[in-house]
Image 1: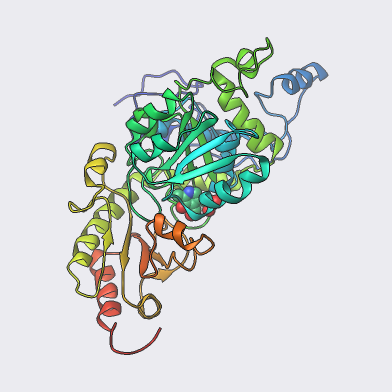
Image 2: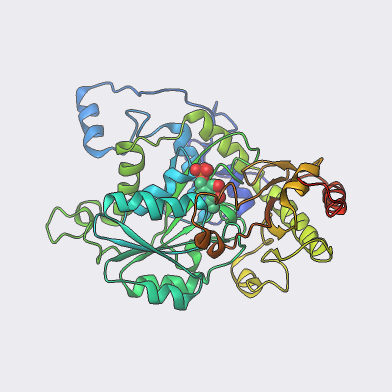
Length: 430
Ligand SMILES: Cc1ncc(COP(=O)(O)O)c(C=O)c1O
């Protein structure tokens, strides 16, 4: 089909499907433009007059210094915004940087966060250990609307959950959590890392206000780069948050208007705290996004087949995967996830050390969303620093193995699991 669009214009086409936006967004059309996103390996950008420099320093909306903004990072941000159906994105150096920025964008000393307990260990660490240093408290509770509702306080500014809990595989009732948060004048923030940058789920469509990612996972997709992002939606209400509305004419909300939340996130995460994403990493992440749909569709299919097969193995205890019809989270997965139930499953084996030592294809590594299938023992690694009760609340037991399914064939993965499981119980300690 002939493309009749004029050239030389940057398009943000909101009608594009995920697959199209993933490869087309962030690339200008025109004579001599690169076909893909180029790397701008630069720390600073020129002005031709002092007036231009002064104007940019007053507004901070263009290019001046790469801690604040870089064209390659900006192209990635445009792409992430399109994929999540949001209003704006700031890309940062890691998922952890994104979580911290999201929380600090709506909380200050004296404020409170309610989170589901089944979140990534690093997020629980921020909530339990780092934010209290700044006077921000948190309640981590069961992933049900009733428990979340009961934990809300007058100073609660943020409700926090993951699209699919790590590693329990629990799925929050996004619409119900949004309603609870909004009734209390708080925002709903969702770590959508396991939702595949909008491929499996777009939480903003269900009432969330802020979406974060560890781009290190499915966005990059090859286990080769760290990154994170915070995307805001278009409908958030900040009129009950004193950071934004202090009653003065110069309140952040009055000065920044609808862009206030996105502005503060960039100002905090990149400008002030310097957790800036490097342009080379932005390039690799943008490239990873181009094949995300293909990868996650295939990985979800393999993960479901393996979860079903593992359920039938006598050596295997509980298998947690929201795509399993027997999962307590299956109904919510069907409501909120599309195109699959994700690439991660958790299962219990009697002797994790022996099982892991016998794997020949699957590798032991603390990452997710890699092209290679990776396993960890969350009890002693990713969640190892949490108190025992918190680990159990996150769905982790001493027998749990978390597996992020990659792109190997189902046959080879199943054979590897079978031989590792088959030798269990033969008396060889791990
Ligand atoms: C769900 C989730 N959120 C956030 C993070 C933190 O991301 P990063 O390791 O990129 O800092 C992780 C890391 O494993 C994660 O699994």
